[in-house]
Image 1 (spheres, helix red, strand yellow):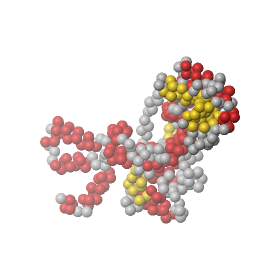
Image 2 (tube, rainbow, N blue to C red; image 1 turned 90 degrees about the vertical axis):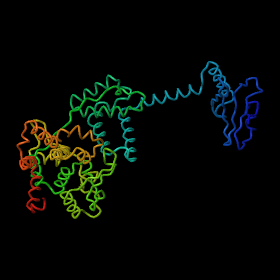
Image 3 (cartoon, rainbow, N blue to C red; image 1 turned 180 degrees about the horizontal axis):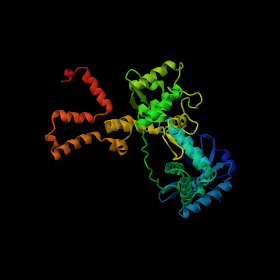
Image 4 (spheres, rainbow, N blue to C red; image 1 turned 180 degrees about the vertical axis):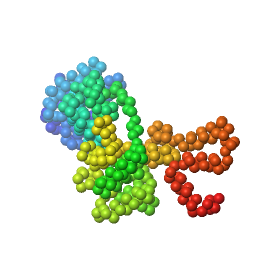
Length: 442
């Protein structure tokens, strides 16, 4: 509802408050401005607005409240707005643009440390929703703390150009590995993703050489020997890493609630998995023996299989630097070379299990499932070259055919040749079965 009124302070004081808002038009005064209205709200507030049609559309611009803004000033504002509309401008759009520019100025006034703090807070929320893992956050925090904060933490976010971004990454790469340079790039890109400009957007990751280090039989024997000098919890956690092939973050944080003795499996929840899916790990007799023993020795109510009173997390930590149990074990086992700067990492145990499984004759499909790779092509790109036993058998048969030697061979000859291709474990199994009674297998 719209009423007409002479705008005076006295007339405003006589206006009644109703259940629904209504408008009062400015008219009947020599200084009245067409389009200026006063809206009377049920709350008792009086609001000046300027209303006009432009290109068939109603434009309503809020001026302010009475009595904070006098009638005289409201008319001056209305006249200015009328001129802007006449010039083809939409005052609301102008106001919105000005607001965005102010917000942008405020955004640019923050430092990179403040930008990281905000990014970190959002990451915590993603962890709670199950979208990201705590392990990823720890990696990000380490990258920022060790490589980015000392260099750019105090800079304002608009102080870095695309040239500066390139120089920053070159500086990091000159003192660190390709992996650290790429992690720094990924983090900076993510931090700037919602800023409207991203100096790191056009920079690409460098190609990283895949690590293929695995332990030989002699090295595994040396590792096991070195474990004999360790406390039971350290020995158990390393053997678990070796015979399950799971990532260290999952093994270190293994919980009793995740172990199903009845089915003989360890269910790693999706929140701990890189692929965001729960993963069932079959438990061998050796692994079940470790778990049963540790269960008997565990304190009542203990959550973790490998607890640690010195760790904030409550379980064995992931530290592998000098002074850690992993450093001590590998040094004792002769698996750390100070001269070459090489050493066996915890992740190499996972790779060792997969490699041994493949060379023993295991399939890529089973290996991929065991490692919980999101795609079998990931497994194939790393371990396919080890899957040679089926190829060896087929090639041997074809070679014999080409050379005519298959015609001279008896069935026993071929059987002996196949037995020679068996692993030591498979030969022992065959011998045990034969010793039980040859005629049982005819």
